Image (cartoon, rainbow, N blue to C red; front, side, top):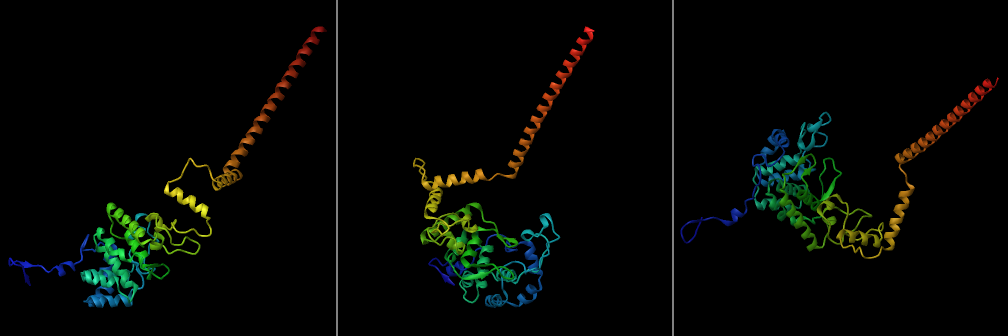
Length: 345
């Protein structure tokens, strides 16, 4: 124990700095109540994990047992008979077999990891699932304002991890970390909510990160597919990056340089309306008008047909009315001539 000049006890700064902050419900680790109940009642957690007492034993168990990052094992949830709000959405409804990943995640929480141990998880080299559970541990326990500082160094991490039970959904660590910061949904459960002001700050920091490091959201979050844009200039927004709607990179062969120029100019908002219409714009407008004139919807055809039938029907009605008037005039003339002949005789 150390003392200062006044004789008071001096706290060890290193030990205090090694304690991880926590945000939320300490009893549940901010987990969904249904998932937490299944974890605490599972034989795997009560029997197998109860024997593990140290951090290194739990890390070894993750290495051998974890094969995905979902909260439920594949095919264990029976939600076909549930309807309405109890339709098994976001952890509501009938439970299933909770995954070993979430059992071990809660086991890590019971150990009350230190900052050094969490860094050991994030930079582990033996298994991507050890790192994945480290990132998920931070997402469930950290105050929202501290998430970006922990995740920033891993936004361009290219190590791949298959997060889906049974396989088939591979993503990089950078993609997963970005999704943890920007999305609440994780398969059939929810992460703790991030306040809107803090969420906006995170998105702004990610924008600055992309500008400084000369990367795009497509590079950080979505691996480009053949035929899509390659990584290039930074820009865009977080929502477009997540859904993959567009990228501000170099154009693929499907788009001409002229089309990309007009598209980027319209997005920037620096369109010069005093400038005369270019050749591409006029050609595009004429082709659009031509295609619109050629294509006619079925409802329009039915309306035109009905109008034509109505027109013919009114014409027939007028013809029959004229025919009746002529017949009436002829019959009146015959009666008039007949009465005149009777008077003559």
